[in-house]
Amino acid sequence: MPRVSVVVPARNEEAYLGRCLDALLRQDPPPDEIIVVDNGSKDRTAEIAEQMGVWVVREPTPGVHHARQAGLKAARYEVVAQTDADTRVLPGWIAAIRRGFADPQTVATYGPIELDEDAPTLDRWLARHAFPLFLRLSALLGQPNASGANHAVRREAALAVGGYDRPFAEDVHLAKKLLRRGRVRYLPDQRVVTSGRRLAWGRWKMYGVHTKNVLARILGRPEDYGPDYFADRER
Image 1 (spheres, one colour):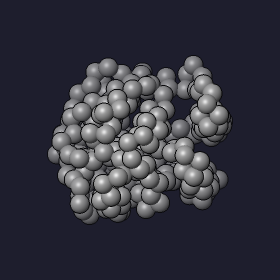
Image 2 (tube, helix red, strand yellow):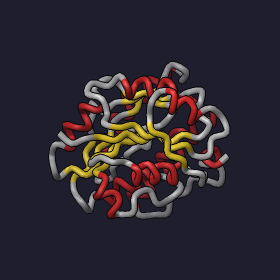
Image 3 (cartoon, helix red, strand yellow):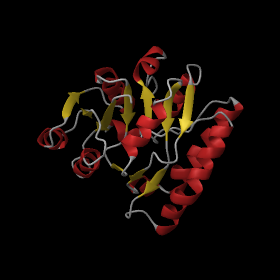
């Protein structure tokens, strides 16, 4: 089975990071290494990671794509999985990724995302029941909707196509580039739960903006996330 590095980009994530790392450390089998990329935090993010015994890499240039790329480059193992600091991977996450990459033709995998208890009941239901159907349909259309909170790549293939090279939808665009290199697989057992904090922006930004841009990618049109969608990533 391939060995797996896990990268967690983090900028001022002291409120969430401990739970994220605890879930990773409890995996059976465990990841072969965990890398927290401190993206210029001004809080205890790096201190918490170090106290929990994981490797901290500093990336001072703000932007989650810079942090993901720094983690990809620093990783020492064949498969690099990525999740977010406000996300908890569920039991069997590493095992599902290792099974997916046992096929040498696999260059990327991704899975569903549920919402944590801080999200409204309707949104938790949609994430658990409707989102997996959307992911399956996207996969059938050749549009892998890999999420930053829940995807893995074969390191050398990802570096060969430039890695995370844009400040928006960096996860989806890397998966699309990797389609030219091998299999990009949706794995229903590769499951995570993420916080509902993005819903503070409103449901349009949580669902509508993404749906609009999925359709734009399918139709070959330019994507538009608006001027402030990713502003929180650079504060």
